[in-house]
Amino acid sequence: MKLVKPEEPVKKIVFCSSQRFRLDLLEFINEFREIVRKNQKPFMILEPDFDTTPKEILNLSEKERLQNSAEYRERLIWDAANHLFRRVKIADIVFIFNKNGYIGVNTSGELFAAAVLDKKIYSLEKKILMGHYPDDLYEEPFVSFLVWDIVQTPQEFFNKICKDFEKKKKIR
Image: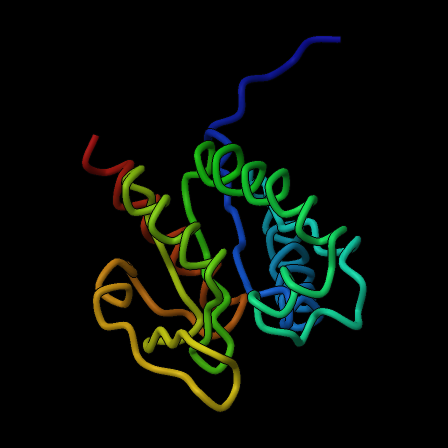
């Protein structure tokens, strides 16, 4: 069997989000994945490993999670390092799923890592809100400055990525 070199290189896309929005993120990723499949684009989707987080701690603040769950505390180091340093590092594109504008401390770290690594960063919403969700949030304007573009649907995200890569091809 002979392997044929693809016309387009594989583009790696990593999704980052607060664990509290994991079901919404999964729905977004699944719809995006279906669009990618239908259009036969060489995109590799990298997503967070939220499946092992017990549901009862999902809506707690990070401070409460760390105080109330020894298992979460121990796993956090591996999960954060795996997502931050492996997935964000190898990605071409980072998507911040900031539902209602919110990002938690870990997603903030992923966003800053992406910026330092000169990744193209997209987000769901323009405002980036941090703090204690949902009642004690504040806007973080500098973090918003790091976002390249805003996309609100999987189809819009797909269209913008394809358009951006077409521009790059023409420049070369």
